[in-house]
Length: 234
Length: 194
Image 1: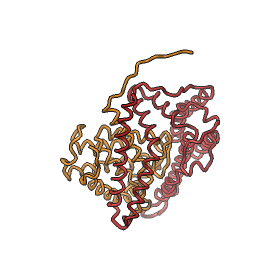
Image 2 (image 1 turned 45 degrees about the vertical axis):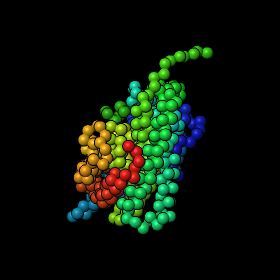
Image 3 (image 1 turned 180 degrees about the vertical axis):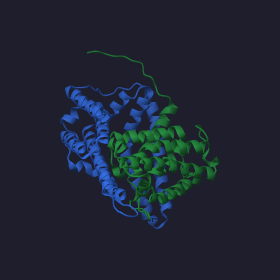
Image 4 (image 1 turned 135 degrees about the horizontal axis):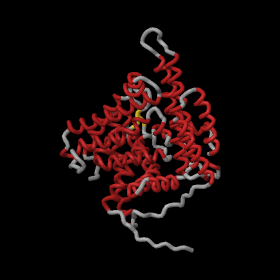
C-alpha cells in the first residue's frame, strides 16, 4: 500500500498547503532540537494529533517500512564496540532516540500527503517559488505525478518481456542495462511528444492556478509552527 | 462578474521540450524505485535510482539533468510515491537516515553531466571517452555517498565509521554494476534520443 492523497473533508484537508509545509519544517526543527525523552514524548502527541486530524493512523506509516531496518539496526551499530565493554548503552540510547525522531517527522509528512491534492501542492510550489523558476517547478512536478504510473507500467512490461525471453539468467548488470534502456527510451518518446503538444497548445508562463487562501485555522497552524521554531532556536 | 484580460507569455519551444524531458526523466528515476534487483552481498534489493542520476547527467547535461533531479525531489516531497520503496513526503528529505543520498542526487547529476560534457553544452555521446565516462560516474558516486554517509551519521547520531558501515559498504558493489550498465547504455546507441 503506498501513501497517497485520500479525498476527504477533515480539518487538515481544508488547510492551505503552504501552512502545512511550514508546519512540517517547524516540527522537524523542534524534533532535532529536542531529541530527549521528554521532548519526543511531547512531540509524539503533536505528530499523532496531526496524523489523526488528517484522517490517518499507524497504517499511514507503512509506506516508510523500507526505512525501518535502518532505524532498528542503527542503535546496535552505535552501541557495539570492538573491545571492552563490547556494548555501550548510552550510545545505543542516543541513537534509539534519534531513530524515534525520524518516525515522528515521517508521521507529520504522511499527514500532509494524505490531505493534500496534487493541484494544491503544485499551486503552493508555484506561488512560493518566484518567477519562471516557480512556473517550471510547478509544471514539472505535476508532469512527474502524471507520468509516473505510465512509466512504472512501461518498466514492468519491459521487465516481463525480458523475463519471458530467459533474461533472468543473465548477469545483473546486463538486466539493469536492458530495463533502464527500455525505460529511458519510453521516457524520451513520451517527452518529445509531450514537448510538441505543450508548444502546440500555447504552453504559457502565466497559467491559471487554483485559488489558495489562508483561513482561520491556517492562522492557528502558522502560530503553532512559529512556536515550534522558537522553541527549537531558544 | 469581474473579467480579467491578460496577454499570454508563451514558453519557447526549446524550454518546453527540455522541461518535458527533465520532468519525464524525473518520473523515470521515480519509477526506478519500483524495479529492484536482488544483489549478492547486499542486505536490501538494489534499485536503479542512482543509475537514473548518472544517465540524467549524461543524456540531459549538467543543467537539465540537475533540474530533472530537483523536480524528482520536489515531486517526492509533495507526495509522489517515488522515494525508496515507494515512499513520499517532505519527511523523507528532512529526517530519514537516507536524506543525504536524496539531496546529493541533483548535485551528482550536475557533476556527472559537467565532467562528461566538459561544460554546459552537450557533446555528441560518441565523442565521450571511456575513462571520462567512468571517471564522471565514480565522481558522482563519491558525491552521493559522501552526502549520504555524513547525513546518516548526523540523523542517527552515529560516528562516521559506523555510518559508513551501515550506509555505504554493502551498497558500493552494486554501484559498480550500475556504472557498467550505464557505460553499456551510452556506448550501445540503444537510446534513440539526440
